[in-house]
Image (cartoon, rainbow, N blue to C red; front, side, top):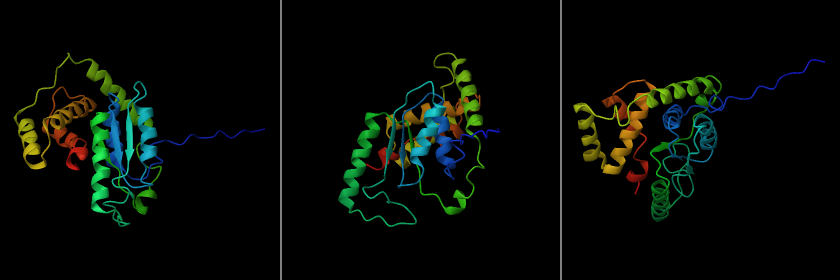
Length: 212
């Protein structure tokens, strides 16, 4: 009697869209950073958390899942938020406190996904390929001298100055962006942090502070 083998679904491929969030959990998984996933109900936060825990398997990172407001739909393009401003303020203050408590260096917005993106489920990069890239980045990072490769060039310093002046990021958030940028460089097996690495890292490093 022939027995059919059940194929285990790929945790990344079953998540429709969310390329930005998938990239963010890849970066964070290099050292198992604590992360926060912020988005409306049904946007894929729980599946992203599950995929992240697989990718960060040698670590036990803290993961915070949250809505952007009490009803969950602040900023959503398909449904209107029904929360009053004071309620939104209190909700986001509690969220910012949680981000500080768990020291979430990687903060990820997970917006609602359009139907056309849901149709592409199963066509993205498989989790095994991402995991292999993460393992190589870890090996590359372990091969660097302690503290090596953390210096910034002039363009990098200028970029962080702009982030401080225009986005109001604190010294702690700038330091967080620098740590994340080092992981992005490790994923590229690049010994130096470049401005492009910092520019990407800043996208993951300021949600909690900007919403206070």
